Image 1: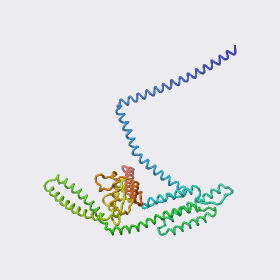
Image 2: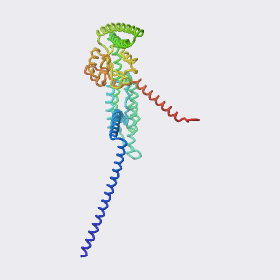
Image 3: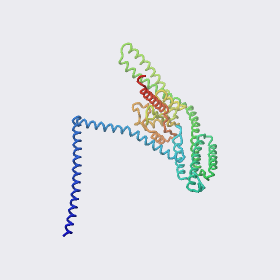
Image 4: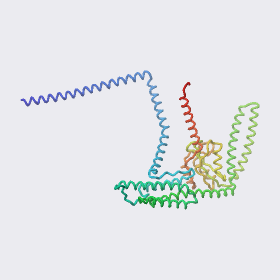
Length: 453
């Protein structure tokens, strides 16, 4: 009987404990529900007040404007973000070479894309050699104060120093090399390897023969480019002789006369439009001007016909692809031809007065039938013309890679230069930025002056 009572007491205590827990849970639930209800009530009151002060249509309109602003920021910011990502990827690519002692080469704007590609391939192979620890050799098990690990660190430091010295001196030798001094540059490179091997004798560290061969190969790539440029100079003399023999100067005369004819006809249209609005003495004066313009146009048309008929007898000339970022923006090129003895004269002429900045040349190649090649290129990119009304304007919204492929399809091999120097344009941007900065600094300084003394 006593045992049973004891159990009953235990059961009562458990029941009380459960009831206490349930009471606590119920209290917290009620409290939480009450608090949420209070918060919702406050939020409803706030929104009701907002609706009274601003109709729901206006709120929707504000949200739409906010959404449009965000969309605009995204659309304008995304190109910048993508461009920064490209630059970051390029910088990271360069850093991997720098970390192992290979400094990225500096190219000139007249270095061809094929040279850049070959040098990049050379550096990739050299990078793998350095990464795999085959660029240098070490035949020693040094111990530094009895520590093999410290000795290994010393040998590793020797290897890195030797490699960096070899690469840096190679760049100096390569930059001094001319098309006729390849043998001298090669001897300097072998002598450099010997000198560094002597310096590394203490730790028995040297530049490996495999890595030396890779640098010799790179040197030969640079030399081939120098030879190619020299060959182009010789070829240019032969091309000029051929142009002289065929009397091809008429072609560019036709171009110049055609341009002048187009502008004089534009002047005539403007003068005729003005004449229709004038009366009396002013009208008579403009009519006289129209008469002189018409006589000039007749003379130019006769000259143009003679120059064109003469030009049609000969076909050789130069095809050029040029751009002007400062004047026309990115992605716009001019594809044309010239029969000048010095083709750059035509390019310089185009950039002298008609546009604010000079043109950058991406390719300039001599062909046997320049008018036909030009016609085919214009036909291929006809739907990409910037000026769809006047076909004398040879500007196209097309990438350099697309023009490269089109010329390869026509069987034309030429050197390409994708980078646009745009020297005058970029210098103008820097000058404006500097002037703006100076003006801002001056304004800030003026604010710092006391109101009175």
